[in-house]
Length: 227
Image (cartoon, rainbow, N blue to C red; front, top):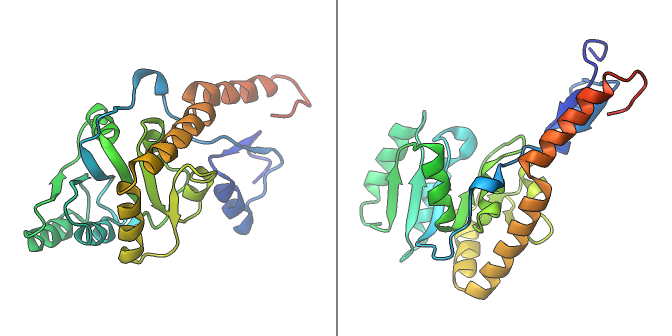
């Protein structure tokens, strides 16, 4: 297969490893992460949403587990944004939770609206079961929103160096405890958000990552050049 492609680009180290595990070896390969166009978006100082889950209502994104986490957190404004194949089950579970008036849900929205809601949130709950190299945590980091996520391949390449919280396994109580701890300490949350914002904007700028693709295209015009 390596003879078919001049260069193979993986979006994460975990994807590159997965390719090798399945016997996919390439003569030339490199890693270029997904990125975000930061220039047109700004974080918001006054955040009126405590916790947001934003994504497809699909097994991958684990929305039913996220709802279980939300049900363990009282007196906090929690917003779910998204639609998908698990929507019927999600709505049924949500209707059973009518006593939780702090939990809101709206279907999928336009990208600009989603980013606005993300920027208004203090914490992004991101308990995915699997990912490649997800964009949503990067967007949250760039917008000053602290990410609490499952410790899975791809996501754990982003949330390191003190810029977010990774949780092993899927125990809703563990997630709720971490979230409450962050929300109870505004100063610590501001530190986490600041570190995350700096990392996201320095490392995941779409403009910088696009330049790396351009370098690869140029290298293919020069025999013997390495990407």
